[in-house]
Image (cartoon, rainbow, N blue to C red):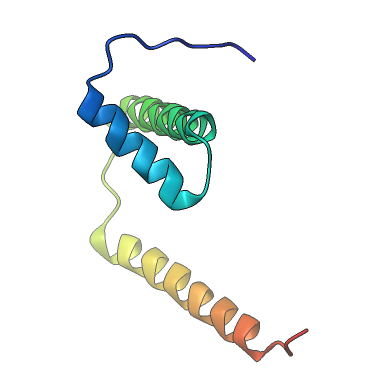
Length: 91
């Protein structure tokens, strides 16, 4: 893995980050690594959304009734799965 050195971090910002790491019971290094990873995931998702948006440019819009039907089916599936999981016997 690569190493990163960040210079000139304002003292108040660093103290806030140290406090957040301590609250989680983790080291500053681990906290910052997780934060950098979360930012990278966010950037990848934003790039994917932009790519999909570009590909869909000029395509016909999905009718509201179809969109609503799909969202309702997804919602129903989530509720059914939640019911299945809550009906499981505890280990």
